[in-house]
Length: 440
Image (cartoon, rainbow, N blue to C red; front, top):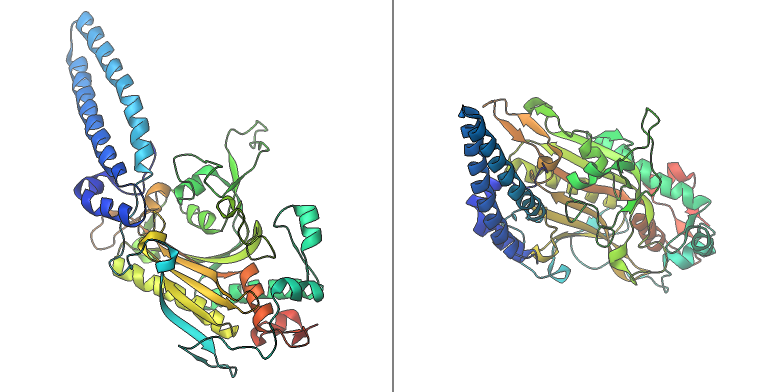
């Protein structure tokens, strides 16, 4: 039995709202109609099967019992394709949408709700535009190559398309970003973890990283490992393994099939990991440099909370604020977007994106994404808690947010801190990791 992201009883009782959410998320609302029709037929067959089974148990005549057994078997055979279709439809049901999410068709209609522009003296303004350079700013490709801290030619030679090497002081800068982010998360009460990046299928299915019931390499931007693993017994493992695109699946799957207690919540964890993404949906986009790559490092935040929407919203705001604080301490111009319905993932209730300004590339670039899933993920991972007041067993709410990713923050620092002579001033909070104030 496949666990689902929404309860079927909730879907039956709120079909109109879920169909509306599907339409606004650019998904097919007819899925809900088909699901309810299949569900009705399925329930009827199940009721019939149960009635036959009950009669079979009461039957004293052997011939009558054998006949009822055959009838039950026929019903079960009819039920199999219905169960299969029911499962396929259930995983396509979207989550409901927060009332304050703007209605929009795609990413062009995301709403900017906050921006911060550094004044150059450690302070910042919540309006205005990023500073203009008194020289033509270079992009990270030119800067990184000239300073011998990036090598894309050898990266492509060895790693293939989107491959890259970070070298010399660039390594200290990237690792400094990661260490700074981890230390910040610990300071904010998050427990640090280095989770596995090679995971079983259930962790990715459970967190919604598969579009359907199984991995589909045509649409799921996940790498599957071809080599078979071995169990502790030495036997060949039948389980599939995958590389994670973020530590979120590993961090959340840590609690799969657990029953927590109210006093344990909220649980705040921060994971450092390498991340792998096939980027199949971005063919032809951002083909140069390290803006869009197949592997990188990231520090991720996840929170498990009680089933309270108001409390979950506050936790999401807290997570987003930490990301903002780090951008400000790094002196990077950034803005915050409230993601519109048409750009909101199927499982997301509400999402904010953080974007930093890249002067060399002359664009805003996503450096973080904060999502509130409510119980959409925890139902599939089967993570519950016991409500201290009522004793009721409830699914936890799950939230995640990027603390800092390595490539785009690295790009933002190179391009925002470049000097006229092609050097890079190191942000003050990173100087202890790099060991110098200027690269070059």
